[in-house]
Amino acid sequence: MSDLMRAPLHKTYDVIIIGGAIMGSSTAWFLSKNPDFDGRILVVERDPTYTNASTSHTNSCIRQQFSTSLNVQISQFGADFINNIRRYMGGDERVPHLSIRSFGYMYLADTEAFAQTLRANQKVQHAEGAVTELLTPDEIKARYPFYNVDDVLLGSINTVNEGYWDGATVFDWWKRQAKEQGAEYLYNEVTAINRNAAGTQVQSVTLKTGETVSCGKLVNASGPRAAATAGLAGITVPVEPRKRYSWIFKAEQPLDQDLPLTIDPSGVHVRENGGGTYQAGGHADVDPAVDFDDFAMDHSLWESHIWPVLATRIPQFEAIKVQGEWAGHYAYNTLDHNAIIGPHNELANFYFQNGFSGHGLQQSPAMGRGMSELLTYGHFRTLDMSALGYDRIVANDAFVETAVI
Image 1 (spheres, rainbow, N blue to C red):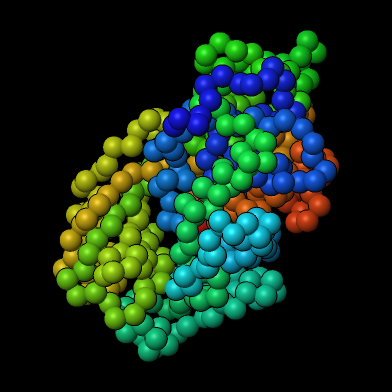
Image 2: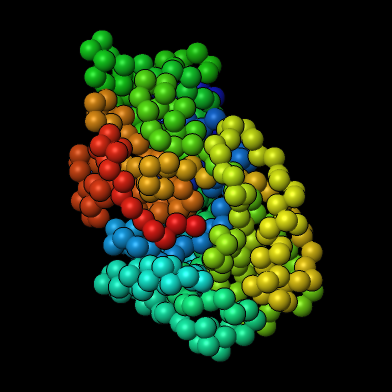
């Protein structure tokens, strides 16, 4: 933490970003790299260890199996960025070559209604160039003999640019290069967002250490704390922290091939982790909003729900040993579980980058690029994500995505 500032170097910034985790750092990097942006950037992060950030608790996976063309395209850019990170970062030889470990996502349908959803989603995905396959139970069993498919009607899988990627390395390099390109990271907390006399613009922010810093534009990239940040400006956003639990376990008899990230019809998911270990996740049937600082584990959930589902779906997982566990937060958009990106309808220089509902890491390249374009040009230039704007929140008009985990 020695290189982190507690006081800003300047009294005025063109852009202040509240939140320095994956989304804020993506925006800082894309903005500082944009040749048409020539301004000061300040990133304010309350916890530079990122211990409880959603970024630190992620599955770190990416998929193209969404039900809307826009979400498919968002992930396709993410995959291209991951696979070509050094090129995107100017050929910097310090940046490692990365790739996606494409074991795929396996959706399992146990009802005809969900099977129909998978069929409809495949058509959307194919139209965008994804290579999603639909598999009968016999076909699933032939490729992945470890599954119990007695109750399965249909499976959906794509093993091209779907699977694990090294999100921590991308995050690290976004921060590192953003700083080298002039963005300032501040270890502090915004305690007030101050409007101009007319009440139409954000004029400045007040920091926990007492300084008041003026800004041209303000970005809310504060993850599960999005509503609290918006509240400082007297506005609302339908995002709340929802608890999600993860476990790392070792199998007494490891599978002899990669395990796709399997989404069981129960909602429990599990994926390959390497070295005979696996990562499972889920949540309780009762899924309320929680306090921002509530990361307590529900230890009973493993025995009562997660393990029984795993052992039923993959009988080799009857004999397993938990090696680690944690609780993290989804930044849960209660309207439609989709991202909110763009300006407030009345406070025009307040920008949302919130509500990713578990998709934030994989969507962060496209969201950083898009936010950079909004801040620089006032509109999207590459991928039009205006359907994810705040106007739909005002109108209570959900952007429906059926492929939500």
